[in-house]
Length: 485
Image (cartoon, rainbow, N blue to C red):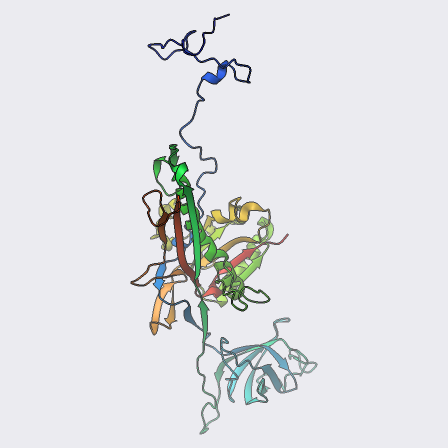
């Protein structure tokens, strides 16, 4: 057994080695032992066990950011060009009625069908149709319009049981009609009796104020501890106690995007906007598509997904028919689309133009997109980390949102402030800014530590603030993929 010398008789060694007479002994009965003389082996470099943890970048990829000075942004979108009405009822052998809605935001306000218009009458359930001439078009009340019509190919609207192939619309209430032209007799003096004034739909959104803060007290700043890091914003090296501040900033930048994706306006029975509470919320991407766009629920696997996807194409045909679209999807939907494409021949997938990426397939792949063509549409698919991350929507098996389809390019809209038509991306962020204050992304330091001398607080506080909202124009061209258990 070595002889342990008392503290104070330790002899220093000329080399870094453990000898019988140059180590400290902790054998004093208090639970310490010989091994505690050694310092622990410490890895300076932080282990990135979750990879890149940031979620932002989606809006920067598909939109733009523009300043605004007001606390509300208003824009107008065109309505349809041609005259059509849904939910038309056959109320007699020669009469059709439909409800009038004087509210703004409809394709046409009131009844704009005139006598001598020629219309197509369709039954969505059976596919039956009939072409007719409008003899009389009248507003029978403030809320109801009545058309007196004569079909071109049969006696009346309820002629079922007559000649072979005649159409019977008796009692139907879900007919659809649209005007395809007009016909006047020779020598007719009068022209069209009703003038069609185009209407527009007006939308608005309001910015919300988003804040965050990081704080460290003065005593902790004196405890120097260096950690080697490689952060998600591309920087690497050693950070002192401000590593936590760096992560707070990254988290806040994610919030700037997440708040605009998930945002909801105050409505319904919510008490947030009541009285002096003053909260108004903001319309986020998911809310805008759910309210004004298209939704497909439970997109199925390889066996049925092609039919589901083709139904999306047919719906896009009825909307803006924008050729290039981006798909941001979660892992489950990505695999389902891959299974769908796996069942199609190469001819069905090939021919993608990659026009969105300067016709460079390599650029698309470098950005994480894979392209395919179906019908007359090009689609670029990529995983959306926000939907897969375990700390956000990937935290549960069924999050309700599987992905979004977003049209590429720009839209032409009328800007109420500028008073002119302008072209902007379908998705873009508006933030409050003026010559006095730019609130796109503000950060400042308060306290009495770390170079700030603004108060007697023995701490350093790093504040973050932004005021912004998302403008989703032409939401009828967007598709929201949802899932239910």
